[in-house]
Image 1 (cartoon, one colour):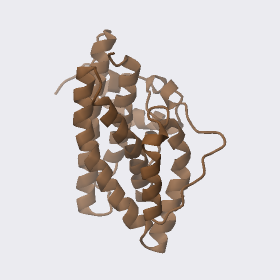
Image 2 (spheres, one colour; image 1 turned 180 degrees about the horizontal axis):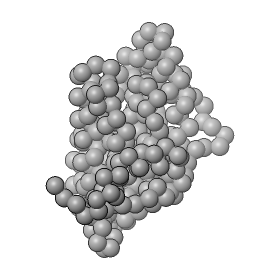
Image 3 (cartoon, one colour; image 1 turned 45 degrees about the vertical axis):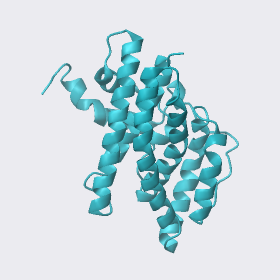
Image 4 (cartoon, helix red, strand yellow; image 1 turned 120 degrees about the horizontal axis):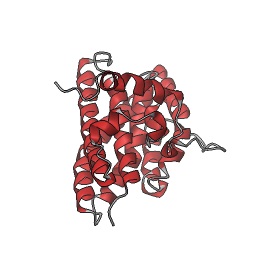
Amino acid sequence: MKATVESLLRLGDDRLVLGHRLSEWCGHAPILEEDIALSNISLDLIGQAERFLGLAGAREGRGRDADALAFLRGPTEFRNCLLVEQPDLDFAHTIVRQVLFDSAALPELERLASSSDAELAELCARAAKETRYHARHAREWFVRLGDGSDESHRRMQAALDALWPFTAELRESEPEASWGAELSRLIETARLRRPGDPEYPTGGGRRGVHSEHLDRLLAEMQCVARAHPGASW
């Protein structure tokens, strides 16, 4: 069965929004090496987004390519999970957000790489290869900071507590059984405490119900394309 436009938009929008968030660290990361690493991961994610959105546009049949889907849709048309649009309050938030996202994204990509939909399978196999690197990079920081100084441990636990409610939405794409146990072991290795699941899970991004953070992100990301529609350089 071929992937639906809706499922391709989810895959593409997750990566487009997260890639933009990571790009905000360019020139501001704690160390030069990390500045380069986060920029490269951002470029990988935006490249993945372009391919998933390109396939979504082709299957939609309305003449919209990846650029049109990225730059000419409003917030309610985006299907990304709420986790990826959360702001970079500090480096701990960035690392925790990346670990939580990769923990669910990697098994989903590996599963879809075996899909009978050849075009989707090819895109997912390529994305999974890059995501394994992203996950390894973020997990190393996760353990280093969680099991580091009192200050780094405090900030990591605060970030984990703040972002954990958004993991409920990840279960809509991938059952927790495929990623939850490994994530729990990682949290334990980092000497952090796994937060309890909220009584009222946070969600709505898959239905186009987003936080104010996405409005601001899209205003910045789309301003040039909207100011100069159809321009090329």
